[in-house]
Length: 263
Image (cartoon, rainbow, N blue to C red; front, side, top):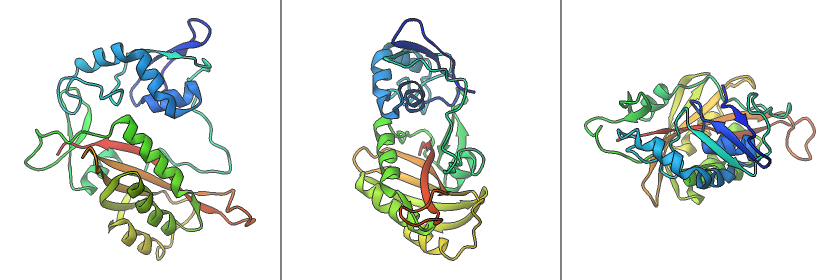
């Protein structure tokens, strides 16, 4: 269920946050560009930070981290918005499959990366580790999530799933990100573990169907900030195919979600 958007006056909307919302998604739905999330944060910094202060326990620690943490029930003003209704999910072009539901759960992704599934006092899920559950590894900020999206775009659409996986390593490195661990999931079940290059080679030997839900869970660390998160990637077939090759589908990478880690 998406949050409710209304238009109090021309050029603005209000959006009430629901579970699962991010400023990235809200900007995409209301401003047509997810990278405009900073405009929403800047216009609502006071209410966003006030809501965050009500969650002093890890992983939030009383701060939104510039909009990374937002909470259900918070009413945001969306400046310069189209005020399009947000009660329906944006559609994806029919030539492109974008799996975003089902598949690997947060708990499975956490375990695959060597962590311990846990919840804080507010009931928010996070991924912990043995012996250091009280020490915070700060999750990715919205700006760092932007870099993951740029890496996704850099990978592009290739002729094989293995090729997409191999190029992801280079794309993340170009954004100052290091993959600490990677696990391949097919239809929600763990199949392979190793670095991305190893997974890329093994993927070429698997007998996969176009309908299979292929996901890679990566434990990713930012080289500059040392922020860390489990990032779940979906790989799907774009039926529009490779440019200039009629009938040749290509594999494409999509960010599914990033999961906070406390370690």
